[in-house]
Each structure stands twice: as C-alpha cells, then as structure tokens.
Length: 226
Image (tube, rainbow, N blue to C red; front, side):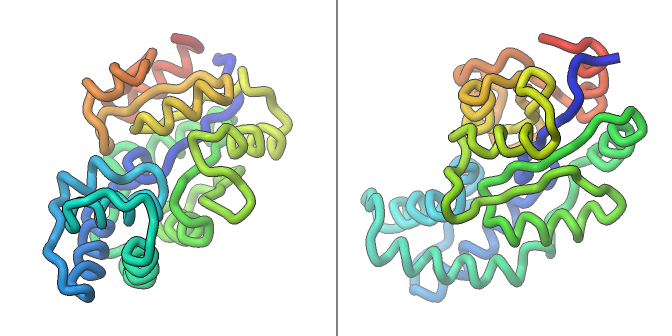
C-alpha cells in the first residue's frame, strides 16, 4: 500500500488545537506581573519552539524590547508553566478528522508517534486525555539532555525505537519548525493547513506538500511519495 511504515506527528497545531488554552494561560501569567494581555494572533505566531521561546517572544512583545533571556523571561516562564499545567485541557480539542485518521492508521498497520516541543510530561498527559483509545508507539516532548526540534534527534529516536529507517517515516506538522526538522532528519514531511501557520509561510519554508484535511493524509500515504 505505502512505502511508509510509520507516521510521526507534531502535537500542537497538528493533532490538537491548543491555542486558546496557551493564550489564556499566558495572559493569566502576564496579569500576575501587572502586564497587559497578548492576543491570540500573536501567540499563534510565537508557538512552536517550546515554552521558553514562547516566553521570550511574549516578554519581548509586552516589554517593547527583545530580551533573549533574563530574569523577566525566567519568571514569566515559571508562572506560565505553573498555570498551563493546570489548564491545558479546558478549551483544547483534537482537530476534526484526527481521531478517525488515527483509527485508520491503526487498521492499516501503520505505526504512529508524536514529537513535540511541549514539555515531556505535559505531552504524555494531554495524549492520554484526548486520545485514550489510541496507543501511540512513541511519544516524546521536550526533555533535558535531548535537543528540541528542529534538531533531528527526536526523529532518530523514534526510528530507533520502532526499528525503521528515516525513509519509511512520514512526518506531519504545521510549522516551519516541523518542516526544518523533517529536512534535518531526512524524512518526508507534509505541512498541514489547519494549524498555527498559514499556507504562505509553509511555502516559503519549502513545504513540498500541503494537506488541507486529515483525510488527505490517507491519500498521501496511498500515493506513497510527493
């Protein structure tokens, strides 16, 4: 049927629409510091590189400058993580068609994994909560000692855990970070248009294939290549 033996998914913006919970949690954190709200459209542009990069970007926006690190970013990150860990499953929901796609992949014998820049324990928690009937063959978030995306280390770990080669993996993501990860790892990667980046950005980042709905991933797998 397909040359792909496994599909590796990004999480936020690909499997789950997490944007409102992330935005609400960040705004609660900003309120604790007496700072103004940040809009959901700004958060959409800033997510994808992990919570620290998000905090750096938010602190730069609200402070009107660009601190690469520093006390403000560290404090904001700590408070944001505390709030988000308690509020990560309020408005979050799987994108339409994702559950059905995962069921179909299981029926076809195609193995699945998740690679996220979200903290590892949070990644595992939200997967258990939102996909209780689907047992992913691999799931990893950001962990100490493991470089985050776009470093290819997580993709190689996925391949090693499943005993497959990179050319047998399709990586599915919604951002420039995911596309770069795919290139760095030497795996085929498709960009989804229902996530946190628009078509123009993904094309500029060199996307070879863009997917409008989860159903189209089935067609891509049947086709077996770009």
